[in-house]
Image (cartoon, rainbow, N blue to C red; front, side):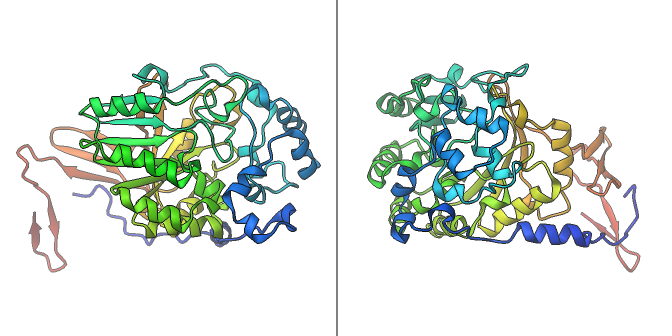
Length: 414
């Protein structure tokens, strides 16, 4: 029997909020920005994009004349931590006049990266503790994560693997592919291999095919996954030739990484549709970041826009306790409030699982608002997204004891 019989109509979204939501969901092409004179064939060549990345403070100062003091100090100190690299394409998404631009915050270094807060560490998820061979993490019983490379198209300033990626002066990580594959071959419980890094889609088609083929030849591996931010940072990499090659390795899944609706451009959508057309299921993993996506309208727009790109929102991560990322971190309390703003207010497909990758190697732990308020042998008391309470009878012998009144006064039993 329901503890709430209220049947009010659902309130419509405020007009101003709806307009903002729809504006965030518009697909745009930002053109070539500062690279108007570049030939179209070059601009659309992913290797040209990589070759012309912004990697130094001087380049950045020329393109963004008004850097904040924090950005200026960070850009000229970035070699001491995580190298800077921004593809020209992704740079066109930055608003050079807005120091709070959510795209800008993700890729331009800041001096706060040198500040270490309490609880932060170089390897917050204890990946190295669960590495039986260099470059391979075996934390869960039936799956492993294989680090294929230490390079990315661009470098996220909150990177969980800042200790490994970018090939900077303080990084000395070199994947050991033969040892990694040998371990997978010997470990019969491994049925799922996630290829990560760095970004494996930076490999040439031939090198990627060799890696995928060798993993697929291991008989007990049922599923291959690729973790990548290339469709967002470098959509030019997603070519017909690449997609045709990937088709050979099904079942193959791809997890992308997008944090803000502005990242989902016309070019990114085209790249994602190409992957989907190749029969590859796509999921997205976002990180909850202060000043980027810690806003209910932004978060909802992003999740809905991902679905329009044929991508299922999969995880929303609480920002890992990586050294120098305190300025990005949002409280878990606020994260739960943001999840409440999604559940019931948009399609279930648009609601990711909010997780904390437990410090010290505990793995992903789902965190959710309290929808189950009380649980006894007889019943469960539930609260829905509107705050209304409902009681569900709990059977002792797997027989559902629920009754519902029909419009004509009879009862349905199930």
